Image 1 (cartoon, rainbow, N blue to C red):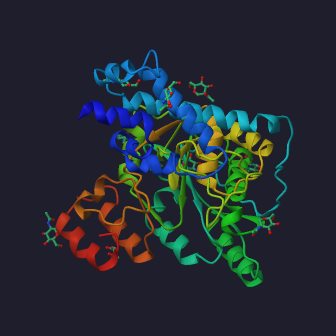
Image 2 (cartoon, rainbow, N blue to C red):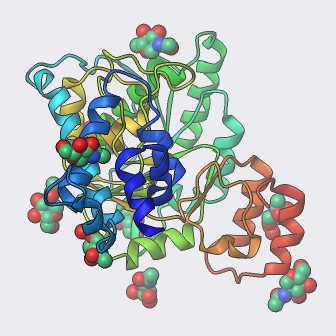
Length: 387
Ligand SMILES: *[C@@H]1O[C@H](CO)[C@@H](O)[C@H](O)[C@H]1NC(C)=O
Ligand SMILES: *[C@@H]1O[C@H](CO)[C@@H](O)[C@H](O)[C@H]1NC(C)=O
Ligand SMILES: *[C@@H]1O[C@H](CO)[C@@H](O)[C@H](O)[C@H]1NC(C)=O
Ligand SMILES: *[C@@H]1O[C@H](CO)[C@@H](O)[C@H](O)[C@H]1NC(C)=O
Ligand SMILES: *[C@@H]1O[C@H](CO)[C@@H](O)[C@H](O)[C@H]1NC(C)=O
Ligand SMILES: *[C@@H]1O[C@H](CO)[C@@H](O)[C@H](O)[C@H]1NC(C)=O
Ligand SMILES: *[C@@H]1O[C@H](CO)[C@@H](O)[C@H](O)[C@H]1NC(C)=O
Ligand SMILES: *[C@@H]1O[C@H](CO)[C@@H](O)[C@H](O)[C@H]1NC(C)=O
Ligand SMILES: *[C@@H]1O[C@H](CO)[C@@H](O)[C@H](O)[C@H]1NC(C)=O
């Protein structure tokens, strides 16, 4: 039985699911493009070289029955190959600036981080000009700790919203200007909002951080439909021994996944020659150490523009710069639609929630509030689709 399975591992990609999971197989092996055969071959070679001394003679299989594949080791090496592949594919472009930062600020809000003590954490929220209500809800709920000069982990934090412009936005620009005057927490760039421009927005946002907030230690990147459990996050930052300036923390997609050439997340070959993303974190919420930012800014100018911001920045660029990833399931991502309300207090972030839900979750998780599971269920059922 065991012997048969091991034989299949060597000769049939579909049977790999026995060992490596259907997800892995579909992402890596069923990607139909010019690179896939090469990489499948490289992976097979890796299997061969790892688990047999003399391939192609019958004894190989007999040997392997006594030594089943170490999936973790194989994964690590495969990831390494993908990372090296990414570096090679890009190497030529590193000499020249091909994607310069050219966009002007509509609003630069340069004083956000000025204070006698530099902020420990910058909460960096991507938001659309029209999402006034979302921003206001964040300000009055979980973002409150940062917008006021109160302490966070006994260190200060700041809140900033990153906005672009809308094509039909004259009136909106005025509203944003007014909101900015009132709250002083908006940075707006002079380019149009679109999914395609997300990486542009992120990189310009990080450039703002380098220019105006370069003493900060960590950036928490979030979208404006994401709730952050402040109490839990401060605990995470305080107690996680892996918190350092070389690691990005978030919900890690270990497979990376294929680079898509069609659809919502389409990327052309000129934009990204690789067929596979290295491991990356879900873009809805993650922690980026400030020390990674100057190198990322420099590198991004030397690479072609690639619109899938999370996979590009925390996958491709991260791999080139040799930054690490730290996975935590508590950076819950979009696909987790149902969570146990009573387990919620252990989550760091929940994405894809509306304003009501955000208020509810804030009432339930605000620091210093006792967790009451009965209350979670009562409130959650009414306001939160996630429960
Ligand atoms: C392992 O190596 C042998 C000899 O090169 C080759 O015939 C066989 O197809 C290889 N197996 C895989 C899965 O690549
Ligand atoms: C599998 O490989 C990993 C990573 O190299 C290693 O830490 C682990 O000890 C190995 N497990 C076994 C059972 O050899
Ligand atoms: C924030 O609070 C600290 C300590 O109370 C104070 O020194 C600093 O000036 C304040 N900064 C701002 C911008 O209010
Ligand atoms: C913050 O500082 C206060 C006073 O120094 C201390 O009592 C408290 O334990 C500190 N909190 C944390 C989370 O470190
Ligand atoms: C993205 O921003 C650029 C630079 O300002 C602009 O020219 C372009 O129209 C925007 N693209 C989309 C698809 O909105
Ligand atoms: C705040 O700091 C920025 C640079 O980080 C500087 O340009 C700006 O003038 C400062 N603002 C004040 C009010 O000191
Ligand atoms: C990270 O922190 C270490 C120790 O504090 C420091 O030596 C190093 O220069 C920092 N920056 C980077 C990019 O590693
Ligand atoms: C949250 O708590 C505040 C103050 O107790 C209350 O006014 C508000 O209605 C609550 N909101 C939700 C959605 O539970
Ligand atoms: C928890 O909430 C329920 C419903 O609001 C309330 O009846 C109960 O007394 C609360 N329990 C505690 C320990 O506060």
